Length: 178
Image 1 (cartoon, rainbow, N blue to C red):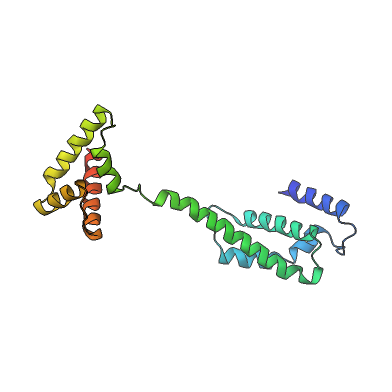
Image 2 (image 1 turned 60 degrees about the vertical axis):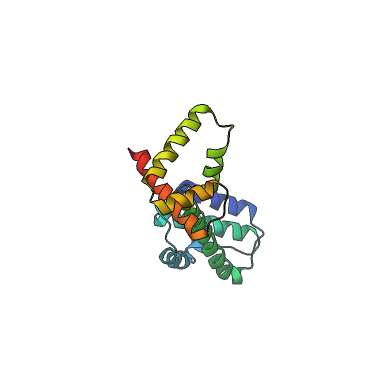
């Protein structure tokens, strides 16, 4: 981080000598540390330490200085941009987590159409037929009638379809664990 800070300071003194800031990078950035520490309390990012937040804040501060932001409005711009950056990182982190939180989606209509489809390989057809027969055998009479109606292409209610789907998922999970 020291090398990073030194390279930023060196670049700032060479490229922004015509800007109205005449303080060194560290001195000027230290004025914004209370904003950074307040943001750390408000926005927690997993596996991040205080130094990570400070480094991100330094990058944002550096970007704002290079855009020619007026010095009197710099604290407001910095606070908004830094908080929005942290919110975006949290959103990205949560979106990545959601991939693993959701289970596999099984559509009952697709399964039923695949069972009736003649283009399946013989081995797959036998496996599906055997699994379907085992599933039918463990169902109650009313549920068996509903499933056979669905296979024949007749309409059943959404709640009935959902109940059959849940039973099929439980059966497949139980069958897969054995």
